[in-house]
Amino acid sequence: MQSALQEPGSVPHLAIVSDGSARWAHAQGRSIVEGHEAAADTVIARIADAIELKVEQLTLYAFSTENWARPAEEVEQLHAMLARRIAADTPVLHERRVKVHFIGQRDRAGPALAQAIDDAEELTRANSGMRVFVAFDYGGRAEILAAAARYLGGGEEAFAKLLHAPQMHDPDVVIRTGGERRLSNFLLWQSAYAELVFREELWPDFGRASLEDCLLEYAVRRRRFGGRETASALVLG
Image 1 (cartoon, helix red, strand yellow):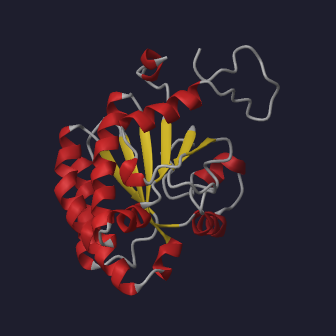
Image 2 (cartoon, rainbow, N blue to C red; image 1 turned 90 degrees about the vertical axis):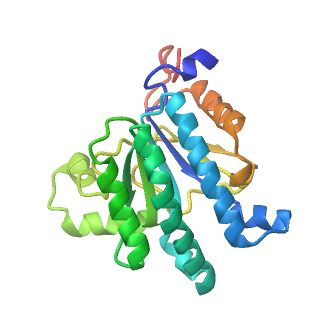
């Protein structure tokens, strides 16, 4: 089964709701900012793992439209950390040929963060390796509403082209850490037939072994997409 995980395209699109950083910080007696720093370290490590496991697309939930309701000081510190880490970590991803995309609204990002986002996309634009989509100031409902306002007909395929990232495949599996069991407004349209895997680990504690466990669980599930189950319905043979 381990070798099956490393087959190209075995998990074409993996999406992650990386929950639990603040609770991790509290349990460790650290500040929330330190929790977010630890979360960023975990993101970079798991991106490297996903590359090795031949994941083609990876989407990460960095900041939701609802996260603006958090204390203003926490939001400001988080955005400052994001700007710094994006600038520092993008060259590392670039060396691995990762192509970085940001999805969501950008008009509310501060100048430093907005510049870091633009620079990351520009630096990695020509890369042909794994695509990483970072959902920032993102909400699934807002994405659908924006697409609906521009929709002139043509069915699901035409509608999907109006979403934030038409080049994004529908996720095959969505992992959520931190013990909660909901999507929290994440990729609502795209996740219609995604397999959902919920984990108790807080995100900074989500290691390589945890990721492999999730992908192994996905690998033995049967995906029918509304049809009847057949012998060929196993995700991996």
